[in-house]
Image (spheres, one colour):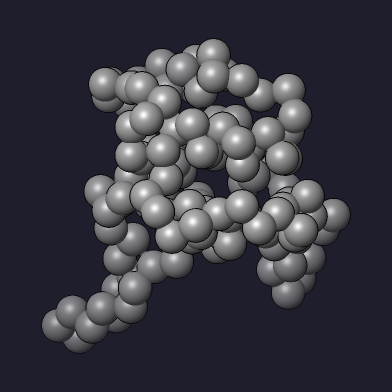
Length: 126
């Protein structure tokens, strides 16, 4: 979740707490199609012209469609393998609504977005 937040895929909410400012990501909140695609667009130019994301909660089937725009070879088995390798221990189906933590883990496992190079301004190098 921290990687997805640091990469800008998921936006946190600033919360003043006592004398500190904190950023909360709410990992158990269900992810929406739009927020995931909007967060991935700066990293993956293939999504710049993709307008098939709604405000609906993101299912595994829809996530796979978005991921296939980026990496055409991905399939349902890759999602299952990624979930198992990270030990999420969830009941998985392609119709399952995914929360932000689950999406973060899947994106990290399948896209390795955190290994992308950035410049001094924090912009991703293509």
